[in-house]
Amino acid sequence: MRALPALSVRRHSGAAMTAQIARSVLARDGLGGGMDRFWAWYADRSAQVVHRTERIPLDALKGWNRHPVSGTVSHHTGRFFSVEGLDVHIPGAPVPRWSQPILNQPEVGILGFLVKECQGVLHCLVQAKFEPGNPGGLQLSPTVQATRSNYTRVHGGKAIPYLEHFRDTAERQVVADVLQSEQGSWFYRKRNRNMIVRVSGEVPPHEDFHWLTLGQLHRLLGVENLVNMDARTVLACLPFASEGPHPLADAEPAGADGPGGAHPVVPGRPDGGAGRVDAGFHRSVVRSCTAAEGSLHSTVGIVSWIADLRSRTDVITRPAALNALPQWYERDGVIAHESGRFLEVTAVDVTAASREVPGWCQPMIEPKDQGVAAFLVRRIDGVLHVLAHARVEPGYVDVVEIAPTVQCTPGSLHALPPEARPRYLDAVLEAPPERVRFATALAEEGGRFYHAVNTYVIVEADHDIPDGGDYRWLTLHQLVRLLRHSHYVNVQARTLVACLHSLSVGSPVTRSAVPSAPSRR
Image 1: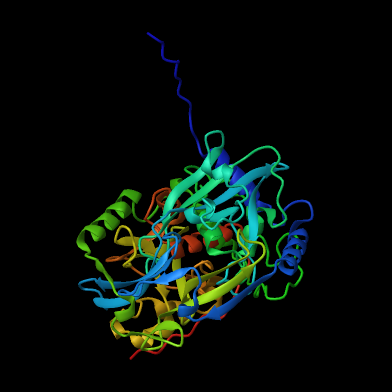
Image 2: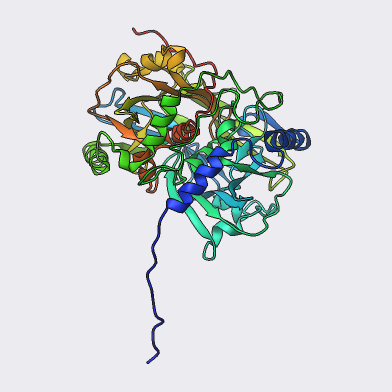
């Protein structure tokens, strides 16, 4: 009988990786030319990458079919995604029944960052990527951002750079690997694999790729519509928290100018105004990343809270004919709601020399107004907590996910009953400037959504707000722990987690216009 090989156990600790992440966060100006080098590269790619997006009628889509009975829009290969109709019933909700168009993309894509040490500092490999729905041009994406149809080359186009590092991880160090949901109001049960893979040795960047420290990425989160949604969701999955004392605990907060000063002005890339750094707030963020500092609720209690809500909430969905949805009509080449609010289904013709194929047509979802996604935060015994909302959306795989305190499109509230107005919307929109810790307009996924932008806001509450019902106060280390698992933290909350991490060394406050909301009826 053949003898089995001897096995041995080894200790696994995240402490070393957390320390490396901390060093990278502190390297806010990067290495070897720093932010000036980054902005020169970005300006060059913006000038060199030729792209065009032209709006066209839905009936002019080439390579896409309309089902003769249901009106469903699908690709001729049966791959990529489809636009379908959905009937929704959520008993007891402010709006218990409605119908809507929704994207159905059942395949799981890969969103992945390569990270490696350069001169002892961890760097992430970002890509300057064009998507047809991007407002303003190129955005910073993860190293790999691809659907299964793309990376298996259904379109017959070019191979995706660096894909091999994520499809075969046997000889590589996997830092994070988890399936996460996307927008449950626009996608039906969509999931992507969020990955961070550490490599060693030489990994030469292609011309559309650039190595950045986490500190540089954190600074760039304050630039409107620059760091894309896929990069933000993967950044949130970093093991940023620690069990014991956090490596950033003794770091001095950066001032408004920060190490390295301001970057050169790039057209379309304003940074917003810098605000006063609050050292106490910085310390509360770092303490929030440390499990040993404690939390208002236990993590087991938070998981039980979500499980209870999932078990008691009914979300009943069924397919519906896209061409016969109540209150929706097709006119002038788009599908729109009779109120003129919510969203439209539109189509685009795209030219993009830098992509896997040089041109294509596709349908897209276009929101009618800019949204708001905000965390109210407060310090409890010096530890920052965020007020999380257990949110129900029809496209979630598992009914309920942890969402921002406020997540809505203020302009659409005109078309909804008063009870649909988010509970804490006024606390966000009317917050005094000195209480706003972060505010930047950031685009959602430009491959499916046309000019979809939310203003991401972090507001420190100036009074006690009790939790209960579908709201709970959570620490950052609890959110990071939940992000190791699928379907707990929604995509908007993941962006805000990344933004909160950027405040761990006192990044300057950034500002952009927060959409106004209709007054109470």
